[in-house]
Amino acid sequence: MKPITIGAVLFVAGCGGASDATVEAQTAANATAETTAAIAAAETAAPKDHPQASLHLKLARDQLVQAKRLMQDDENDKARLLLQRATADAELALMLARESDAKEKAERARQQVDSLSSHP
Image (cartoon, rainbow, N blue to C red; front, side, top):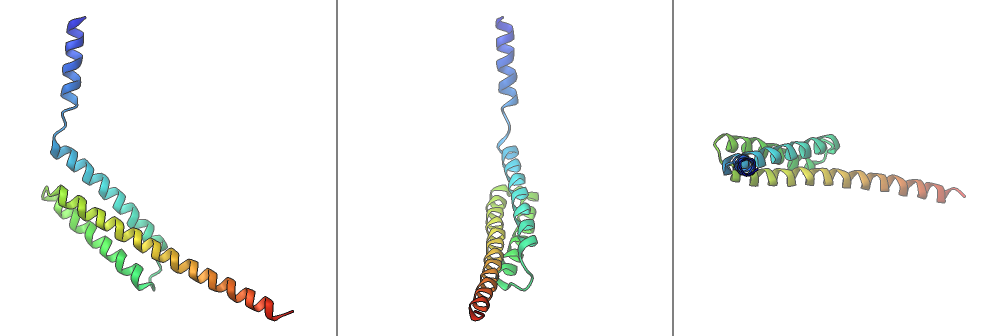
């Protein structure tokens, strides 16, 4: 029974020893996927005529490209920070688009109320 236990411990220890570089690369890859999803969501919701949302969406795209270059150079820590900024910019673009949409809907509702109250 001891040989099985020792062998199992050695096997588990060997499998769990992922290098720091591997973990950093996986973390950066996960952050890239999160950022890409945030950008896609913002692209879907953000109207082209909303300058602030468009600006933050462009920043997010540019930062994603720059982060990918950093990952190719094994600068995963810097890339991860840049990806966090890109995600934040994409999320801000999405929130600005949603705010704009909510304001438009509120204005239409106000106009409908005004029109109904002016016709007794």
